[in-house]
Image (cartoon, rainbow, N blue to C red; front, side):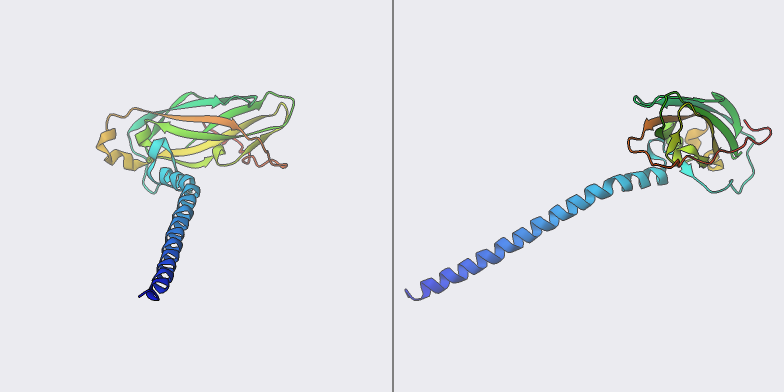
Length: 208
């Protein structure tokens, strides 16, 4: 009987070792999954906002809608802000316009680098009411790229957009009269050596 005790102790030690290895493996896998989830959270959140219009995130399209513009009009207001640390003057050429739903419209913002050095910024944006983000669609926007401005440079930057005709089928927006498109430029600390600003677009005749 005494001879069996060392064997039992050895089996117990092996079982404990396997159990510890299993627990360690599970814990390691959980850590890896948590780290991976943390890295994936931001791009997933951005994708989710673009796909659903959550938090006023606008949509992106390559061309005009397939349907003709509707007779219903809506006011679109334009807001501009500059975060601290970026010495820019930034404002829309028009603060409000009336557009037909489904009509492709081009508007311009003007930005001036008021400092004596090259600076760079990138715009964040949203629309309000937040629930209309899924219907406000941009075809072209300066917010898609980092903007690098020479000392004293002034630039006109276009925004091409339309309000999706699908909004007419959303009865929660039957009384919607105004949409506000808001931009805030933030400084880019590590600016690229070469400008990556959006291509300047010559104003077409009759543009807003």
